[in-house]
Structures are given as structure tokens and as C-alpha cells.
Length: 109
Length: 113
Image 1 (spheres, rainbow over the protein chains, first blue to last red):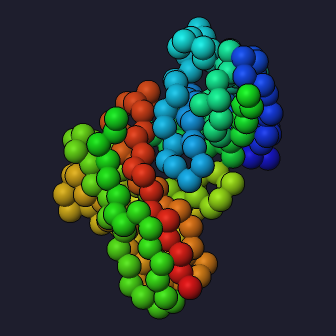
Image 2: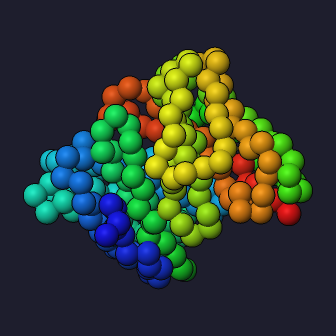
Image 3: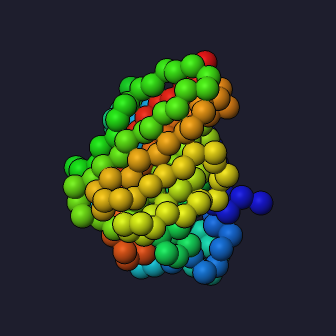
């Protein structure tokens, strides 16, 4: 079983749609959680950190459920520029980051 | 925007050559990392460093070596490149807190013929 699991997609959605990505992690001692965005052939860039209370940044909302070891990302009003791969990332402590394989999102006109 | 740089961005080289991939950051971060990523696959940690003169191997076994003589500089060396080393190599750095973001360089895409 992978330490961080994501549905690889692709998720094909029209502009304006709402889309949700899920991620599960296996290490219950994990310390912190992030969503990174990676464009094709580019480096990953932090999209947002994920807090237990849930957090929102504009059109993006992240949720963490420690009991179920589950993280989610919701994107509202999808834009063409949101097309990318979204990486679920878990910090297992001492800055040991474990990356999921990513979920690919394609937003079409 | 992250201040972390990698050179070269692209490298095509023959088997058996020695190569060094450069990584430098101007954020004063003590922690630095090297990841390897094949197309469509997840990132795997191959080396990391907690500071000057500290180097550790990551989860993925790699024939590469690293050095950390200066805080801002974390080069990766392959003594004898092979086709199996063909991949994207990403350098990153962070602060000490577990909640600190890791910032990534633009990567070096290595092709060994």
C-alpha cells in the first residue's frame, strides 16, 4: 500500500465546474499536510497548507480528517488555468515529505 | 517566488560521463533536498541535508552523491552516467519547522544516451 494515495485522474471538467480531489495517507503520526500544484514539466509549487480546522484560499478549500487519515481539495468555479496535476503531500516529521502521484485536472472551455 | 536555482535546466550526455547538477538558494535555508521524478510518477527523495557538512541518503537508492560545503549550495554528482539515470532531478529547500514549505527549483532534465 502506498503511503499517500490519490486518484490519478484525469478529471475532465468544463470551466466553472466544482471539482473535488481526495487523498489518503497511511502514517497516522504525520505532522502536516499540503497540496502542491505541478504543471507539465515544471517544478511543484505550494498551493496551500491543510489545517485540521479546514482552510480556504479564494476558490480553493482544503480539509483534513485525521481520524480517517483523509485530505481533500475543493476547487470552485474552475478556470482553464487550473489545469495541472495536484499533488497531495504529507510531512511525516523532520521535513520528510511523502508525495502522492498526483491527480491530473483538465479544465475545458 | 522562491529563490532557488538549478543548472543546467537540460542536459543530454553520453554514458560514462561524470556530471554535476548545481543547486543554490538565497533564502538562508539550512535544509536542502534532492528529489528524482520520472514522467507521470511521484517524487522520490534521494538525498537531503540539515546544514553544512550534513548529508543523508533518502528513501530511493541512488548512485549519485552530494556535498554541502556552503549553506546556499547543494550540488549532486554522478561519477559515471548511465541511461538508467535519465530522469528529472528537483532540488528543494526549507526551514526547520514541519509546517515550513519546501520550495523547489525548476529542475534539471537529464538524458543519458
